[in-house]
Length: 524
Image (cartoon, rainbow, N blue to C red; front, side, top):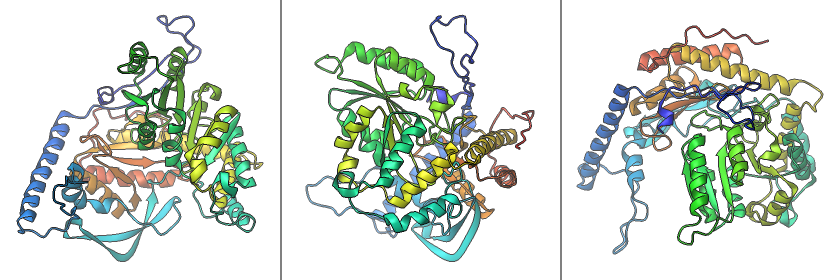
């Protein structure tokens, strides 16, 4: 995380300009602006001390429970003679003594569609979080926690109407896989539309985004192959890489110098022990990283994969629909040729208001997956109403509904992102990520402030996600806001007022770089 712990503006040569140190054949690169301000030393020390105190107190509680001096409410593995523990670990200690104190900040039930506003079930925490009781009340809150980037997760409008109309023809589910009488014409329509949307030869869709990665990567690489993976890749990518049996090398997040060094070293040394050449090398990256808000250096990754004859697997879960002037993801954002990416992956959970995922690329790739993918063979197909939701929302984004609604939503999301990020920086918060990323991490650092921020914002009518260890490094706890095209300026200003008030209350304005003179933004 060395490169992450610095305030930096990552700017490469702009299109049309040329660096005098570049080789004549090096293509122009897109300018990227990403900020990762260094954690203040005092804050880092206090954060470590906070966790140390919590761990010590946790061990004291465990001691008291062991000797019956305190009631033990945790779930313990039954002791079996001569057996080692099956699941007892640091994680269970962490859950038992730290997580339960703040568990009301997660797993919050809602009773409405995940639109601009959501209704959150109010719960009362008793006995240090071991039980949560409903108060029979609901909190009406502004929704900044859902991945509703283009605002299609709604229970009204043209998409919802089309879904209702599809039910009499296709039903809810046919309970079969693609290879066993489950493939309907609506799935074929979705596959073809997705390929056309992305500008590639073919695409195949799956009912679950997580499984799209974890179940298809093992089809593409096996033992004797090498996966070169970004250190912050999603757990679905990590699981898929481990299940494949391929060797795995990790490079520093978005560090192209380290990526090239890993490729050079891996190619020159070959496989362990035998030193034979790798059967194939697969570079695995994400478009937008959902915890950092950063954007992959796609132009550089494509250059390196071409130079070293490696394949590229690009996960566009958080970028497709949300990035680029036409909403086609980071490929569109960089103006790259989609055919330069060997395997395009994405999900329909975020920008399309649905569920499932896709893999797109050459016809040969997709034909291979149709025969060998575990998702195709063993999993039921995507439910027809979900497929219809994706078809309707994707058609709107492409402008095939005869309106400019898709274009308007993409522009609205871009404006919302710029406005929200700039205002938070003006207030003095440390904000991570790319200036165009709709994922906006606000740094909290200390464990006590994770719970305090989550509770205080919800009490004031703002629903946001707070994240701590082990999902983030131990001193980089944060709140994460997800922008949506359905947010208007009034909604953003109300949310910013709440965040500003809670930030003052909890003393969260750690930034040394306050952007008071940033340009004012207007949206038409």
